[in-house]
Image (cartoon, rainbow, N blue to C red; front, side):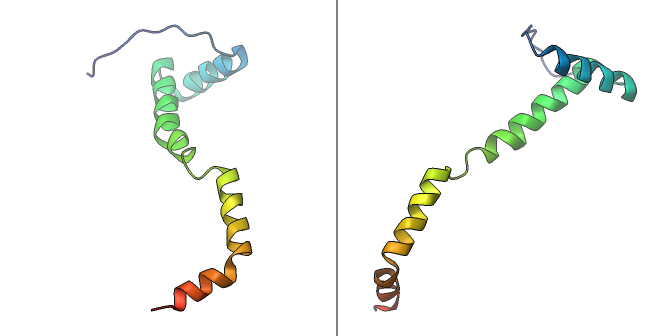
Length: 78
């Protein structure tokens, strides 16, 4: 069994009740449900937030529109 750490954060009461209900419905310990939720968040949600920020993407689009002819000319220059 992996090493464990005890922590006691305060969380939204409705989320807690939902987690307890899911654990009970699935016959799983609350710890298991919480660990899977944390694992999913850390491995799936967090990495997706590291994608290009909207303002950077918008600046790139503006640049492409403004300098399109120059970019095309440079692309065909040997």
